[in-house]
Image (cartoon, rainbow, N blue to C red):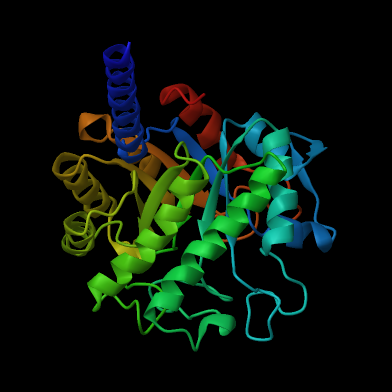
Length: 336
């Protein structure tokens, strides 16, 4: 009887250990999202607060519904730590804070669309030219900054989970090829930068391992810089799933540069790729992004098309001929 019990507990221990290993492997397994035909429309609540209306084919509609009706399946939102601050993105109004994000997340999910959340880890715009620490984090040391990144990410996601609107994908930082949380996390300090990014990635994985994690760099046509950044992240074993690239011709070169860079990344790394910001050359960018080697090109996300750059609405808010690219893209690239 004693031997039987010992054998039982030994087998139970083996089973628990195997399950633990399987769970650990599953948490590190690359996530493969659905193909993305997306739009960043973070300005939408601010536009609506000014009374802006939008019309598609003569019918006034919610902006999110216009996207869905024209083939889009993903909405991207940016979030700042404290945009209401005097030096923040939206002083006194707080657009793109947690509460505005929660409201928009409900609208996205109610429309049956997927949701990408873009953490800026700043009170203000974060991009290759500026990655300012949130005011509340300015005096924190290295360990405290890691904890702040982790906890802020975790708290935002917990609030979204509470209302059943978790994002399908998360960007840990915005256009981060020059780093985040300057000067500590400048790209000249790769170990520090990777530690900050890992803190954000871990918070996402802890919240829900099914959430896809993107590292987003602004190097659309710049292969050497893309490889330098990504090689450093792979060497430091960052737990991410998607390579995101911005592509604006004035900064990132020609369409040929974009194609050459993304083709190389698709061949070199075992990661899916998304052009997660662009505006011009809509049809051409989508053609490149969805036709990469090894089926690694899985999407695009146009930046603020209701209000910035080469918009697909006119000044009165009516969709124009540029919108025609997207129903065709949905058909060509089998967007669901």
